[in-house]
Image (cartoon, rainbow, N blue to C red):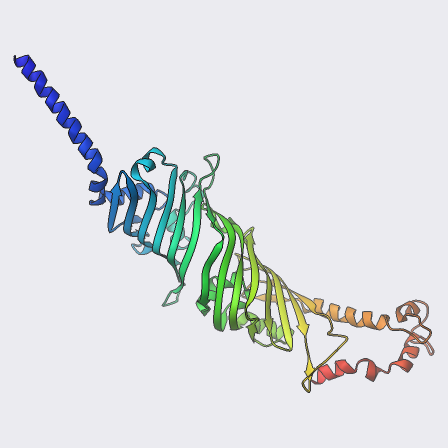
Length: 422
């Protein structure tokens, strides 16, 4: 009887343990959600972040999607880098455990990214948080989609007492693991408008927008509004500077004065304060660590500049400015053979020290002038250019002598003199 009793006891104990294990498994998500284990779960799920991750609360269950609130990811200095008001997934916990490499879609609401621009060779605080070496994402083999709603980017510049912000940001993206399991994961940004009718500020121009619109480098005064629409981007998480993509920068209104314009003004004799064409669109793209643009038009009613080219992330310039001059005398547009076509001026150097090649503009002006003169008809119907090749053009009765009899210098270049008088 004692053996039977003992066996019965073991059986009941086993059933109790099994029942307890089942209860523990069922209640585990709830226990994790209401203890410090939820932060350990986040830390394990985001191994690429080297900072400390905390959360205010969580809702976890085997049969409904995960949800976290008040997530804060801090850097080594203890300051928040990423703050998320609410993160919601679309897959229940059991599916995440069974298919860990396909995490589904997460909606992030009211997130804030605080970037401290680099003050040393170590890079900015986001670089330090993510890791700081080229192998940090080689093991990131989890794919998932993110939808950011009402996000905020706050950029803290060295020596600036207050951060400039971009908000609200609404964007969809996807983290794509490397196809072979080795290499870098990529962040793929969907097409769409990221910011809409955002007001311009000088710090924003100096830290970011100068790469898209070089005239905004070192602004002394700026006002206006702009929007940005992306056409799709792919950004390697190991080296974001190698990202590729394109987009449209819509300028609703922009008045700007900058040191870049002042330097161009000294070389090209254009106003140092200009208005960019209202409701204009600048196409931009990024490849090979350079940001290219085309279609930026600015100036005054008398002088219009249109630029295209690229700015490197090292701030090097490879630009071409097309300058059109529209002189006016006594409210009448002046028609000058010298200025009928825009001329081009290469700009090299850096954003802080642009180098303007005005010799190219001089050559174009000379070519236009000579071309016009050589196409003129002599009294016998021959082109001046053809006759210049047959005889000494300065001899009495030569081509120039015959030309001046028909077109005195005062009449031939009268428009140029008027332009100079203006």
